[in-house]
Image 1 (cartoon, rainbow, N blue to C red):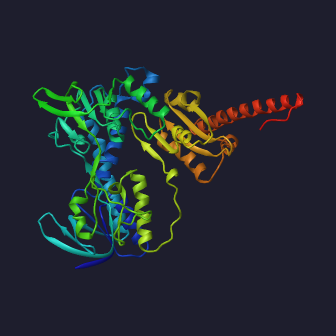
Image 2: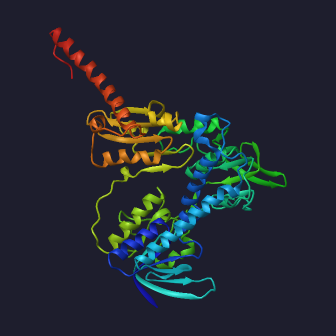
Image 3: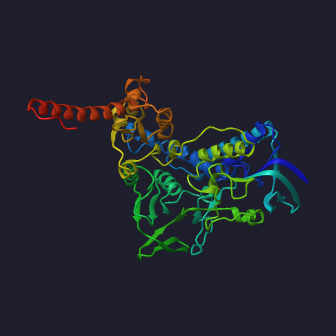
Length: 483
C-alpha cells in the first residue's frame, strides 16, 4: 500500500492548490481524479468552458461593437455550435496541459480513478478496469466539488432538457429556451443565449435574482437582459417539464405553460460526497451533500479537510484555490496570514458582467453604518466611449465619517478586472482620499475610481457645508451651536 503525507481527492482549483502547496513544503503529495476529468468540473464543464463560450459569443455576435456600428452588426450571421465549441475545446485542452505540467513539475503523484474511503486513514482508488489500489495518508483533503441538482419530477435527456454540465454538448443553438433558476449559472447562460438571439424565459421561485448583489447593479443587469428579449417569471415553481416531438413544455404551479426548444435546469448543485462513502471516514454530509468545516477548513475528523464547492458558499474557483492552499498549510503547521471574507471579490460573468467586493447598500443600511455613494458611469469616461460601452458603471460605498471604502460594485465591460483596484485599497485600509489624489492612466476604465471618489467626496463636502453654515448662523444668533 502506498502511503503519502497528504492525499487530495479532486483536481479542481481547490485540489490543485492544496496538493501543490503541500509539495512546496517538501511533503509527499498525491492527487486523485477520475479519467478525463483532470482539472475537475472547473476545467471540463464549469468555469473555463462557460467563460470561454462567453468570449466566443461576444466575439462572433459583435455585441460589444453595436453601439459603434449599429444594432445589426454581427461578425458572423449564422453562428453554429461548432463555431462556439472550437474555441472552448482549444482553451480546455491548453488548461489541462498546464495543470498536468504543474503537478508533474512539483512531483505530485497523479492517481487516476474513482476514490472512496475505506476508513479514516485509507482510501481505495478504482480504475477503469475495476482494479482497486489502496492508499493511506496522514492527511486527506476532500475537493470533489458538486454536480447539478436534478429534481425527480424532470426527465433529463441531455438534448432538449439539460443541466448546466450537459449544455455545453448541445448540437445546435436553440431558437427558444427556458432557464430554471436565476442564480449565477442560470443568469450567465441566459445572457449568453440571449446574445445569440435565443428567446429566453427565466423562471425563479424567489422574488428577484442574485439577491446577494447590490440592488442597483442587479436592476441594471435585468434591464439589459430585458432589452435583449429575456422574460423573467419570478415567484414561480416548476411543476413538470414535458418533452414533445416539437419541443418542450414547462408547466408551472401557477398553471402557466411555456413552450421552448430547450430547457436548462440550473436550480442548485449537489455535493458528490456520497460517492466518497464519507461515512467510512467518520463524516456526515448534509442534505445537499456538503461537509461542515471550521475556520481552517478542517472537518469533524481532525486530519481530514474539505475545500471548494463541497463546503458551500461562495463556491467560486478563486476562493476555492485559497481554501486549498490554507488547508494544506494548516495540516503541516505552516503559518498563514489572516483573511477577511469581506474582501473576497465575487465575479458573475453574465453579459454584461458584474463584480463586487465588500458590502452592499442594503447591508450597510441594515447595520446602521453611515455611508455615501460615489458613481462613475462608463459613458462619462473616454475609455467607455472608445469601447462602445455606455451602460457600465462603477459604484463606491464610502464610510461617511471614516472615509474608508466599504464596498466596490462594478457593472459592464471588464468589471471582474476593475474591482481588484478597490479590493486592494480596502485591504490596505485606504480612504476615498487616496483615490481622489491618485493619477490614473487616461483613457482607462480605472479612471472611474477617481470620478466615483470625487462624486462621493463632493456629496460629503456638501453635507459638511450645510452643517458649517448652520453652525455659523447659530453663533450669529447668540445661541449655543448644535452638534
